[in-house]
Image (cartoon, rainbow, N blue to C red; front, top):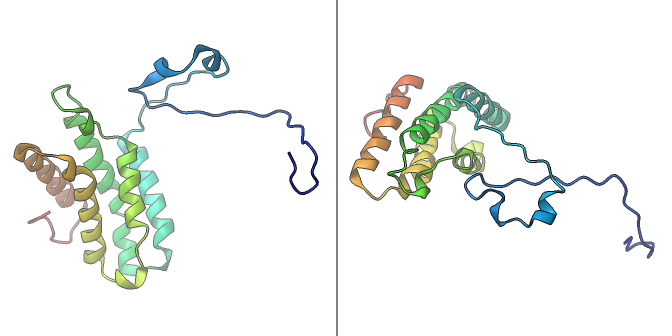
Length: 173
């Protein structure tokens, strides 16, 4: 209904797009609604695709940062991708609870937090990387309640930092 001109509108060629969480699937959706959609499954992207996506987002966001921080930002995509992929692979076994099933939502949450910072407050690459490491801790490690799981997380994060960064931060992730 057009509220400005106060007359009904006729909509043609309207398409719906919907998405479901794989673990919940189409079981809870009425069959009359399901026949309106085509079911398409898409696997989670590989590590390289995640790294390219994260690097692209960070590069776009970091345009107003100091050049040294921008340069360090180029290595953060592979770091986030590597840590996420290794954690998702390690905690994918059925022995871990459902809250250990990591997905791209976790990567999104890390990026949402990192992309809200003020460039003036993060003029040093070490400080910006520290923020990213903090956000990785917050998103992944905060849900772990066993010391062994926290140790595994810290080991994976430390390996990732040593592999992708040369900032000397790997002693205490």
